[in-house]
Length: 187
Image (cartoon, rainbow, N blue to C red; front, top):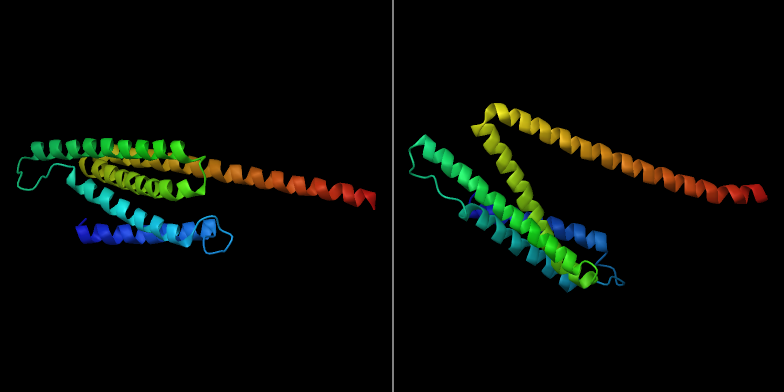
């Protein structure tokens, strides 16, 4: 990706995050514990973090321009994969550390911690896409199985999540029915 594409992507993600966060936390209402100014600056912080992380993403790997040997190119691509994996793990670890350090402190800290989470989620997604692309391009047979395994894991989580929501909804309906039953019998 070019620097302009990275910037545009980061701005779009930051704005989408801002819209979601403003809607979820009802920031535009008068009774909101979060001010409009801090919400706007949280969106700007998200954009700045995404521009920084995406810029680093491209700069931390060795360049393969001018290299003609296929063996050296493959080694450099694998080195880039390892470097980006370490980068992604440090980033996710750091954002989790921030979360656990500040998550019980209140809304004002969530405005600071959440943009780091958005950044780490985007970089994790980018790492997954790059990893899948590398596996498909360099290890075609293994790539098919890796993609299928990923789809199976993803679908397992979707089924689990859907079942959990159904059970919660069912428990809520039963609770409402039990509230209505005593009142009906007293009539």
